[in-house]
Length: 430
Image (cartoon, rainbow, N blue to C red):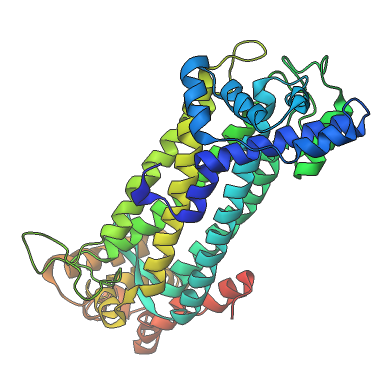
């Protein structure tokens, strides 16, 4: 994990201590389950509950063993007496790794759930704030028809809510442990021990495992993170476009004393949104790696292990960071309603072309004939910088069918806000 993009709570989960604490929790839970089954003396299980490890010793032992789990077990044994023989009884390393990793991923998901809730709250509030604020809608980057800035944000609210649902499902899928031995056959550790351990840790039991929990679970989790990151990139890209000098309808917050360029003192760049967009690429790439990890040889190989030491902490940390950054952007987003209105009017009324088309159709023209009339006027308005209404008023093909009142209805912005309340009601927003 890169410290620059890692928040403390998430860093603690993926730190060496965070990992080893969970390894120890798994080992202690297994010994207790064996004690409940009558194989380990209750007194020895109680002593094992006091087991500890020493990170410095683990590093020293690993230099000798070239195996992190055996080095860990040796350090744990140092803190115990003869009862240390019960630690790791019947287990393979991946029993500990996968079950502890499930705990880390579950706990990381909980942080991200809180992040999403915070973003959703800000988006809901700002959507309501700008519910009726007219702004130009763009398709292909070109002016289309007016919409409202609140409706744009309401769409983001709906997307974040979907993200919350997907994450909840992915969190449930990844909260799954296995204590089934070397190839998952339970030859050295019975299913009832596995069930007690997982229940104690708050995890599901993998119904049929090999030496590993199947990696489709991890791929599902990682791709879910990637989809959330993609949504954040979508939102951030929109703000980047709206902050362009020629548009300037909204911009991310810019604090006192902040600098946008070492060379140009005037610069106010959308650097936070650009950061979100860039980091989303990393999360997507890590998701691809997780998909590659699904296909392992036979009951397992170790090709997934090295990648997971990177992609799990990095993706969780990055998404946590991205959500926090973007929530801050939306909380402090500066919006320019006057510029939004100015941009709506920039094209001499071309935004009303469809309404003019429909009015002529209602007046009796065929769609093809009406389209040609309106397009002809629209192209002149664009080329000559002349208001579309004036050109339509000078066109006998139009005035023979539409009077002044009808044209007033065509060039009326209220149609574009008439049903905004309906969309907000669907979201349960006031």
